[in-house]
Length: 199
Image (cartoon, rainbow, N blue to C red; front, side, top):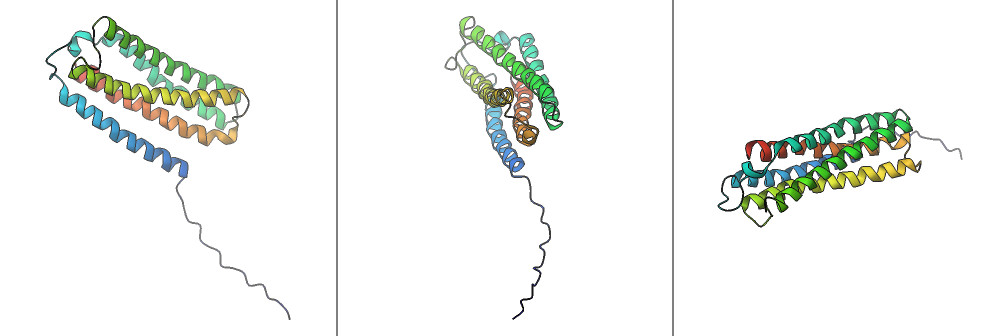
């Protein structure tokens, strides 16, 4: 008996979204809602502290602007790092990624200096007043996200130095950079809320 091969019908190509992009976008949306809650709370409590120092008395704008420039510049350096990896230029990738980590670290150190001054000189703690509670909660939430981003970027940097990050990993590194861009964008909102509107 002769067997006749019957060709199976070909299924049309169905577009599917990139799972990594969908995942990071969902994460960003959820985190945005959390930050929105803290921003609204901060705005609601502005001027309602009956005790303790007021924002205009203790918040020094100049060093925060320097820290902000460093953090926002890190978005630019991480873009260059990802492009370098996509082009297979591992040396440039590592160099620009190191710049990103250093700029982020500068921001964290600057925030630590600011908090140290607020606590030691101005006696502003999270339990001091409504201002202290809302300030440390909002800025601290952002600082936590910066630290998480730095841990991720530093891990990639160490793997890259060990020669384990290749051109084929560019998409994954780009997804981490999306998170970093989100952290930087949120800082613009936090900065305007705390250091412009809140003063």
